[in-house]
Length: 337
Figure (tube, rainbow, N blue to C red):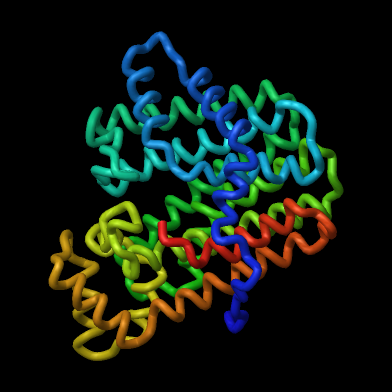
């Protein structure tokens, strides 16, 4: 299943940056719209919204919505509104995630829950979702409303599924894929499908767009999990080993558990039952990840989903933007942040 190998020859050195620069003006419109929609007479909401915009992020989900619209030379502004919607959904889930994970920093900034507390953060996330649904109603498309409301439900189910398997280090790989499909890749898929919806494309084309997004999202998340164990902090932009120290069961640990036996397996199990994990215990994990070549195995999984994503766009022949998106799917597995 995971035998495909990605060839990096002829791929732009950074297709993500290239696509981002291509739609720089549209992304600014999205940011401006979000700032406008999050304005409120409640002073604290204004402060939290400003903090949220300042922390930035890759903006990959709105970029996918804009790109999928541009595949068909879309003329109009609906894609800006809907790109803002997917970014609001994403940021709402991050606000809730930070409370659940008790995170104190994200993207190098203090989290809203560490500044204003958990209760305020939860309510802020709810506010983002409510504004998003208002914007979806204003768009007027039942198809889009169904798409984004369904994905919001799927994300919530993914969060609950993750909690269900919390600290279960013997979790099978399929459960992990189910979790990240719901939590991460579902919104990637919806972002891409938006372009097909607002352009009135065929079911086959919409499914191809969504397949690209979903598989790209899985690839993106697996790569994220790899980076937490195999990146240099100054490149990654966040504290390396954070997932381990927070006790998150990600693919590297799931695969490592399957390889270990005896005392080492028992030790790894005990580590993830503890409340906290030390730097020395992190080194134990790193040594065994290297010994059993776990990062290489994770990379094979990421490569596989990257290739599936790229192949999904093969139906859009002679389309330069589709080729750039295919390059992006191959670039994602080799990103360093």
